[in-house]
Image (cartoon, rainbow, N blue to C red; front, side, top):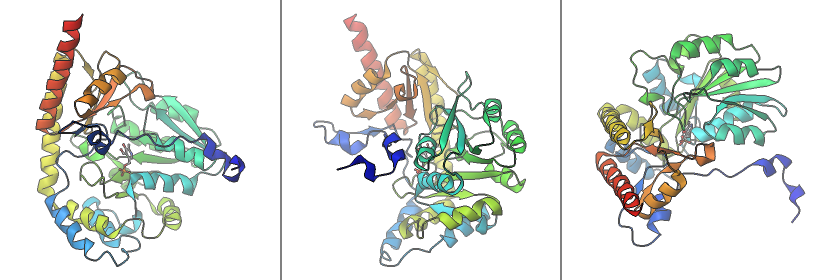
Length: 370
Ligand SMILES: Cc1ncc(COP(=O)(O)O)c(C=O)c1O
């Protein structure tokens, strides 16, 4: 078969490498339990109300979903105080990132962001023939807003800000972000990826909601995969002012958010109690893990997410292989250029206790072999 049949840019793409799926581990033989701590899923699961709503919606699977998820957009509009017309929904935030880049980036246009960050900005930019312009994060692993502004040229179309950033968990100050969006030249659109935005634990911290109301040139992307525990359902959305949301609505595939997923997302938004439980558990477990990791001699970055970016002061490819044998899946960070770091999702209390125990056992075993 000739390689020339497909588009040239495809040869530059690597398939997305996800955190190892628990199923793969379960198939590895004698493991009784598997702890998925590599993909930042919600250890408490979806709201029981969302599960019930999805079960009900399955009975209507023979009907197409609402074309543009109007009921979900209305619900989101109520939550944020934004007109439902200013949203698009999609098949996960991944799908929304693809949509934004496909709608705005012409071949030859530049897309600027810092690295390490979420890999999909890179892939989708290449896919449409754009040029990714990658700038290192600051020494404290934050998006370098000044450096991004300096990198803007006549060819720049989008700047992505992942806030909080994956994999570092860091955020930039909200007043700096506001100033950054104000300073963007007219031909550049900001894209604020707030996949983990609901975990930011700072009173009155401004997010995309406030920036949108202030009329700033920014498209905000969010997901139901993290706080709402609906990763398997694939629901993401974006909101922005009219001139930026219209192209997304034009390009979006019809029915991009399925009937069951929409029902789950709507019910999840209504379950305030579950949401608060998730946030409380995440904060408690985050504080506990940070303390314990420090006492093991690791360095832990401050995080505003449901995961930790940890310098474990050892080869984390090796460590993750050891943990894998015991059923723990973590994310070694060598692929981002941090061979001694791991990104570990904040699990349930039980999962974290077992993880800490396994780490201590591995350390003791190594010490006894020296
Ligand atoms: C920063 C960031 N953006 C977007 C996504 C995609 O989320 P979704 O599961 O909604 O596709 C992720 C998933 O981990 C992420 O970390």
